[in-house]
Image (cartoon, rainbow, N blue to C red; front, side):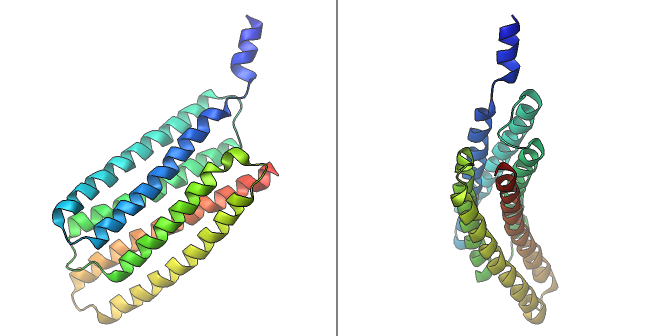
Length: 215
């Protein structure tokens, strides 16, 4: 009986976390790709399907996050620091929350035009999510963190580009948009895109902390 107790509570059980992390990262990339369809497509019917799909992915991500948090409560040994697992999961969930927020704003606000810079921002978000996906799938190999580090560097570069687009477009909107309602719509959509990009970098920062602690 004592041997069974030791086996239950002391043997490593970290394997359960990695599939959850990886599925969340997959959902981020897929959701960002669907958001690009929304900002590119003129077809209302296609957009409605995309709105629903992103909302479904957002719910799936919430369920995965809860599964990670439940596993933290029931697992004696974790693959890395518990607080970092919690932050990593929460920030990945934030990325999808902001992607969903952007989708919802486009659906509800119905802006007259989806600005070309929105497409640029979403394309950067996709590339950032792809780098997160690469890094997340490498968490099983923390003793060889080169690919994770490279992904984090690329994410930082992408965030700098997104930040430039955000500020330039914001200035342009205030200088040229005469319709106050359309200005508010565009500004809120742009801010959600910027927050999605920022959240990707937040995940990257946590990954860098995990690497340092595991060295």
